[in-house]
Length: 264
Image (cartoon, rainbow, N blue to C red; front, side, top):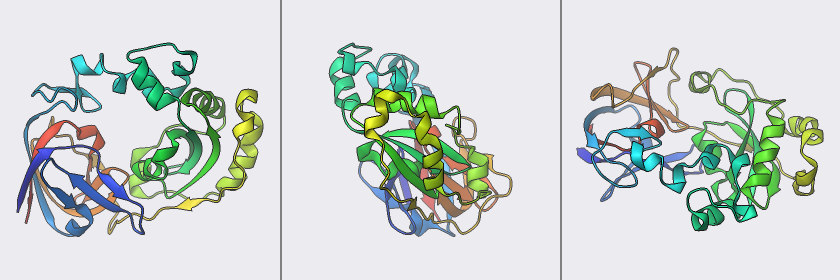
């Protein structure tokens, strides 16, 4: 059976374990059903997720011209503390920036490779944690806009990481942490202007992933460099497909690539 389409972030369903779906324009694949099956990928062409043209992907699934033009790729996406919509100041598209920035945002702790702090829109809980491969996570603050969440994250980065070590996460070389204890340690570091939004009544969320075998030495697959690959799917964690030969494919880093997927 063969499918063809442009890769975008897998859709997830918060079950135990998590359900993963690869969505194409006219079809979808329930990836959990492919565990222990041989899958063959072939690169077909590029398709920018914004202009939909066959142009080389620069970052985040966008071609270079779109990446430096559209609001979905502006600096405040990766650095929430740069948000300015609450000041009525435009960076690329004020209407879009207001829609995204001026809504409730969660500052959270997650444990994927180590304890880290992060920011996401409230509507993206627990999706964001699943995408990062976190096996446990905890909300610690709910801010009314992205800016306040962002400055809180910056303040807490002095005490915990803000990045996930993807190799450690995929090898499952991690330990359980009491995130409620971490929350109490970090509360004093939260900026004064965000303190009214601290959350203390939440419990940890635990996440189970569909993994039969964790890689010992993960090898990254990029369809811009390797245009054909075949392997036995052994697991899915975060947005990574894990194969029997320790090859791992980060679907997010391959967004914008049109591929053929054949199931044997």
